Image 1 (cartoon, one colour):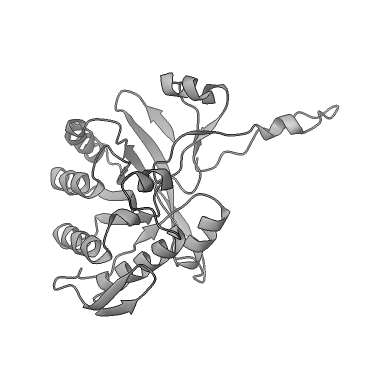
Image 2 (cartoon, rainbow, N blue to C red):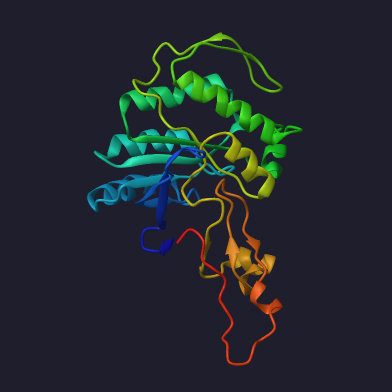
Length: 264
């Protein structure tokens, strides 16, 4: 990923692959931009039009707590552009009802066919607790929400009694003309295994994106300005990342290896 301070966005390359577990796994590279939710919404129109005019393939939006709505900014960006695909990564499912999320996604998918990519996550648990939406098993909620949303967007009528998702004969009156991919992503081995079992895993930056950036005042207060940082794709807080190269003993005649870049 590349930081573009003049735009206030992150340019990114995303590997677009087939669903996990499919035969003949393949991928292509999509070049796009990420509009950071720390920027005021009024800066989005110019950035979206510039990305569209520059020929970028994708624009990804975040839904952090509590700057901006991912669905609202996606609808606006789609209306302001002609060909740009717009993704939202990630939509925290504890804040949503699966039927309402599916209705909003279906409306956008019918208005802007082929240009919308919804992506879900279980949210940052501290933030979920702030609004009273924290659940005992975030991964169970994410799996149930994914299954329900994919079924509803596929035109199915759903009756299900899950731990968190409960639907009684629910079907969309205006489902998308073609069932879209509903992506998910997470951070950490347990979350990644759960998302992998759900069928598809991909998002604007993958499960881990490393990048160098100028330290800001908040980074200095947390002490993360001395090393690498990473950000959870759902908009989690920056956390210090250990420099694993310091653990290796220097070997005579051989240079130490740098940590492998992920998501570049």
